[in-house]
Amino acid sequence: PTPAQVAEQLAARVGLMQDSYLGLVFALCNKSMQARHWEQILDLVGFAMEPDSAFTLQKAIDLDVGKHTEKLQKLSESATKEHAIEIALDAMENDWKPVQLELQPYRHTGTCVIAGSCVEEMRGVVDDHLVKTRLMRGSPHVQAWATRLKGWQ
Image (cartoon, rainbow, N blue to C red; front, side, top):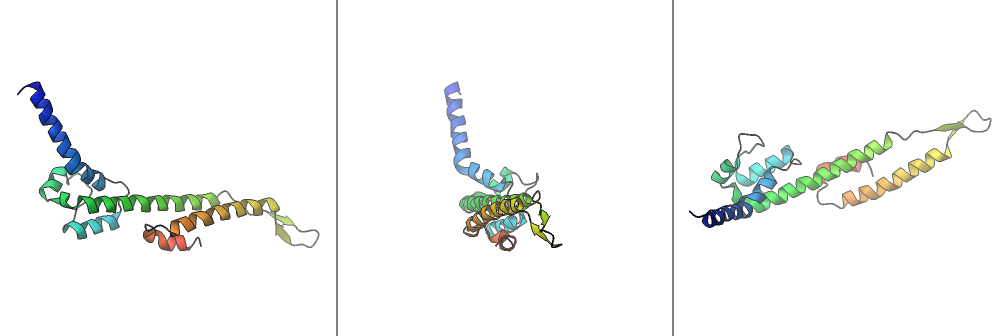
């Protein structure tokens, strides 16, 4: 074959790879996928698939997993959005670690009150977290973290 023919054949193969398999590869190689997502994949394709070195693209092709690419992509996208919620919840928890409750003696009564600067700092964090939790509650991808999110309300 001539170099032009080889280039055409290569372009055709790359095009086939992009059109047929790239979406499948991205969906199945998503690092956000958890065990619950792999269980959903089992239900979808009808057999267990594990994200390990034994499961190759060729095996996926041979098992006709590609016919489920669109649903697998949606599942992968959902896993990514669920993971973003998990990261946001972790960040919210970490926001509270440096916050200290400062108490000051109140006049000469023998009791203490919360320091004003501490209250302002806490109020700012609470306001920020209320906005974040409202946004998360409105997400269709919050179900996996609903119990954890409920603790923030």
